[in-house]
Length: 297
Image (cartoon, rainbow, N blue to C red; front, top):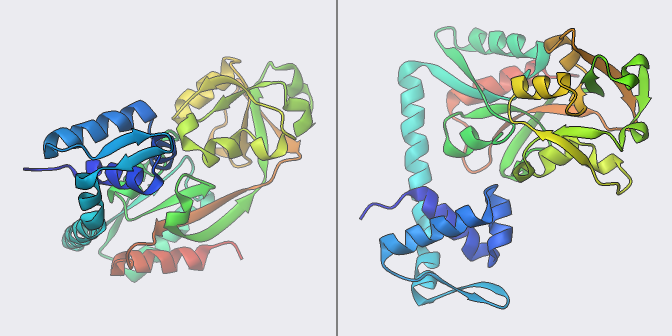
């Protein structure tokens, strides 16, 4: 019988949380989707793993038996998977690095150049992540590390090397009445609809709607987007405004979008993130060293 390791990780989350809602939030998937995956695992195993109780999800006898061995099974598979990927990378001499939006801004190419100084025969392959699933490639092992904006989902599971910090601005349609002002107070924007990332991204979404700076005021969501092009289109169409790193004015300049300074919100930090669960491969260790060399002093 073949079992998808993803189903085992879903089972582990529910077993540890004892609650479907909390487990779904931890996994960044919807509760109905998680319920469906657990049922699929039960069908494959031919056993009931959980029973619903007043306090949440309780393990059955078979469920408890699986829970006892699940960590060692997943750890063994994780080691094997990382070994395969490391061997593949070494053979092809390609280091895969994920990124969001503008990666590490103007530091990106100097970091890659510094890595090539260490490994002249290696190539860095950058893979863009969506705002709807910013850590998906990290979790799956498709990339060894990623340039991330803090905070991001599951951040505590990664080691972080902060590379730069920059102020945030506000992006809006060029014909928006507030675009006539050069600087805005964030409190003046509270009642405006915002372009937001999907709710499942948790702290990432909250940061980019300024949840921590709203004095408890709820956000009005004008549109939900997962990719830069969709985000820019929604802003230009007047569906809402959006907080953005100051560098967005350089990387995403458009005549139909205005970027304005905003007071009252914390800056944005870019970090290189890689999993805590294992030591970096030699190539990744060199990339981390190159990034540290080019980090903001």
